[in-house]
Amino acid sequence: MNKPDIAKQLARRSRVTQAEAADRVDRVLHKILSDLRHGKDSALPGLGSLAMDPTGAWHLSGREARSMTDPAIQQVAQIVIRGVAAGKVVEIDGLGSFVPDAVYGFRFEPRHLPTVFIAHVKEDAGLAMRLYDDLEAVGFSPWMDQRKLLPGQNWPRAIEAAIETSDFFLACYSENSVNKKGGFQAEIRYALDCARQIPLDQIFIVPVRLNHCPVPRSIQRELQYVDPFPDWLEGAGRLVTMLRREVARRATT
Image (cartoon, rainbow, N blue to C red):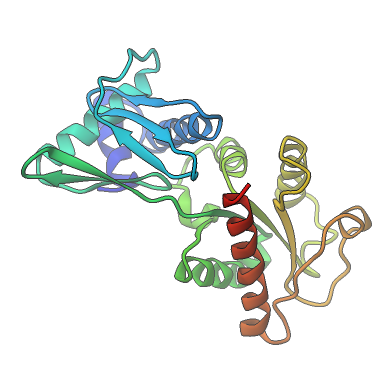
């Protein structure tokens, strides 16, 4: 079971559309990840409490979860419980999987991969998806609306939540996007707002030029960009090396 399956069950039980149910699932994940990153335990009724250890990895404790007021969290937890009871693996994207276990009923397998939000315009969707696939293949958890959102979801709210909980934000500049108004520019502005809350020595926003194009002066003045062209393998390799180096540096501070 994954997000579409969970949303389908939640829609049926709550009598809402599947898109509305998917929005609820995303809000649950956003709250859990936000709690964990702020050093708070996140309770899942009937399952236990998620917590983050000093290394930045999270685990599920078996202690009884405290009472929750958010009905969406309770509903998702119940769907997980019913899923593992039926012998199914229930995956919560970006968090981990609940796996049936003959002895303990279930076990939690965390999936703590560095998350990378990929901002792009629709004209560059092909290259953005190539970047998505390359990052996923080397152990990152990339995020793109075409891959992560279900039809009909409240995409502005989902996108803001995804940016907030990402480890990195890739701004894909090209001749198509530099002067284009709309969602791409809004995503960059929101990422800049989020970056103000991050320690100054951390790399969060990474401009990526998809072709020969100017990068806005305000961005170029403060942030080093990466060019995955003319040699895609070499350029994408430099990007991956930089991201891995930053992940390793964060783990030691």
